[in-house]
Each structure stands twice: as structure tokens, then as C-alpha cells.
Length: 358
Image 1 (cartoon, rainbow, N blue to C red):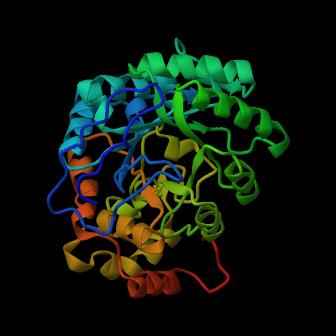
Image 2: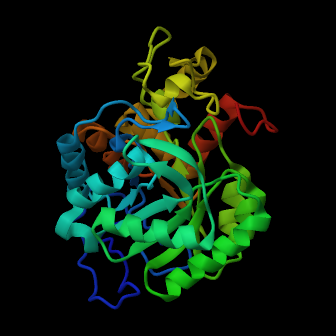
């Protein structure tokens, strides 16, 4: 994955992007193309949920606690130094704060990177609360313009529907609006953040659909969504690649996260319960720890390597709040993917042949 660049031009006709400086130790097996486009992101991205800071969803914490914006920006710039050129955010993260921080951090480097953001949740920026959903064509256009302003850019590389359970019957109007935005040069491509294979199949039929974002980690293999991406030549963007931090090895049975952390209050994820890591998953992790740490990898690097070894269409987007976290995750690029045999061994140890999730 050497000499990555963001494609020859964007839809508004600017000059070719300058390739970013990438790490000379990046594995050559990690080249990526965004779906059927000519956009070439790095095989590792950064997920920008946490740098949005505290916010709520219908009054319940949905952020990762307090953050230092200056450290967040240093971390983004360090990622650029290390060859990371893909950044995934959303207007929901911090009700716009994540987009603002990312835009400020990138500055003049904007043309060298691939920026993905999402839409679909309405929010009150003053109260920092997500208030509902709206996927009407008029709202999608307004949301896109607002994201452009916050990011400080005149185009978005990948614009993603954030409402994962939107009925397919309502998604057609969204897809038609996104096609119009591509034609206007406002966005380069689009995708859907959903864990439902039927919805992914529907969106995949769109001419300029380039990616499906979904959960993927050693505990949640998502083989149906990987198959959909392969069948339609789409990129698989992987949220929760480190199981919301469980796969970093940082947490033990007695660990307790603070009350304002989404992992304390959320019931939709299996990795933490009331802010405590799942004992069952900690035990499973112990069973594959040695494989994931092979070749001098850290545990997090091994978890990312498993994803790359599972499909060459994947771009994991681990979250971050510090430079140190970015350096650890970006270090995985030098090691490359696990071998097919190692991936198979991890899978066999973690689940039976018919067990899709834990």
C-alpha cells in the first residue's frame, strides 16, 4: 500500500491530489480502492466518533467522554505522517463537533485524504443531543451542506446513510438524492452504514454506491456483508474493529468505564455490559491472544490484521483520542494481514462452523 492517493480528480474538477507521505514499512499487500471508483484510500482508516466529545442520543450518553481537541488534532496529523489517509466521521458525532475538529486538523492536507461522513440523525447542536431521524431528500441536501461547512471543504468523498434500520422502501429516495449529489460534484460516492445484508444488497445496486459500513471484528465476522461487498465490488468499512476497545487488551474483569461513556449505557453492543468488559469475551480473547500477537504485533494490531486477512476489501476504522492510540493502530500497516491459516485458526477457536456471532 505504498504511494496511496485519493484519485485523479474530484467531481468539481480540481487538480490531481498530491500523494501523501506514507510509511516506507507499509505492507505492499494492503492497497485499496473505494468500491468501483478510482479513489485510493489507505487500508486503515480512523473512526472519528470519540473525538466528537460528549453528546447524548434522546437524552442518554452516546459519546466517549471528555476529549482534548488539541490532542485529537495532533493525532489526526500523526496519522497522516504514518500513511493513514481515510477518515470516517458523522454529523451525529458530538452533533457536528467531530466534523469541525477533523476539518481543522486536516487543513491544507484535505486534498491528500479521503473523507467519509454520515447523515440521517437530526440533532440540537446547542444541547448536543440527537433528537430523531430524517432522511427526506430536502433534509439530506441540508445535512450535506452543513457537513461541508463544518469540514471546511467543497466536496465529500464518501457520504453514508447513518440510519442502519431505515426501511428499504424509504431508501430508494435517499439513493436517488445521493446520485443527484454525485452528479452535482458535491459528493464523490456514497454508501450505507448498516448491519443488514438485505439493505446492503439494495443500496449496492446504486451506480455510485461504493461502500457498506458494518461491524466487523474477531467476535463478529459478518460473513454475509463481506460476501455482499465482494459480489458488488464494494468496499467493506469496518466499525468496531477492536470491539470498542476490548481487543486492545487494556481492559480486565474488574475494569469499569465512567457513566458518560456510551459503553456504560448502551445495550446494542455485546462487548461491554454496564461499562464492564464481557467476562465471556475476555476468556475467548485469551484463547487467541498468542495468534493475534504473532510477528511482534500488539493485540490491537493483530485484531486489525485478522480483518485484513478475512477480506482484501476491508478498511477497519478504529477509534482514537490520543496520538499513542493512532501510533499503535497505524503500526499494524507494517505487519500486514494475518495468513489465511491464522485467520482460520482464530475463527475455529472462537466459534463453531455455524456460529456467526458471539
